[in-house]
Length: 195
Image (cartoon, rainbow, N blue to C red; front, side, top):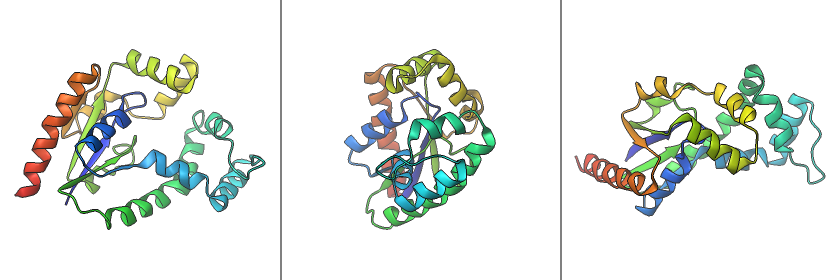
C-alpha cells in the first residue's frame, strides 16, 4: 500500500483536497482532526493544562483559543505542545493504517516537511495557494485577524521552501481545476500501486 503525505500551509486548502481524494474512495487520515480528538481526552487535557498553566473548562476540556494564543506566539511552547500530541497522533495513524485495504492512502498534516516526516511516505503532495488568498480563507474560516493569521504562518515554513521538497503540487485556487488535478493524481497513484 502506497502512503501519500498531503501537506500545505495554513489556508492552502489541504482538507478540501483531502476530501476530494475521499470522493475517489481513498482512505484519508487527517492529523489535525486526530490531534483535536486527542486534546479532548481528559488525561491529555490535564497534562496540557498543567504544562501551560491553563484552566480547564467546566467539561474538563482545554479552551483551544487560550492554548492557541500561547503556542502561536512562542515557538518553544508550540514545540512542547507538539511533543505531547504528535506521538499520540502517530500511534493513532499506525493503528488506523493497519486496518486499511486500499491501493494507496492519504495522510494529511500541515507540518510534514517541518517535522522531517517526508521520508515516512512514498510520495508527498503539496497544496499551494497565493498568500493573500490563504490569509483571507483563514480569516473567514476562523474569524481571526490578519495579524493572527500572519503569526500562525510564521510557525510554518514558507511555501517556496516546501515546493522544492514536494513530489507533486496541487494549486488550489479554482475548485474545478483543483478537482481535475486530484483526479489526475488519483490515476497516477493508482497506477503506481499496480506495479
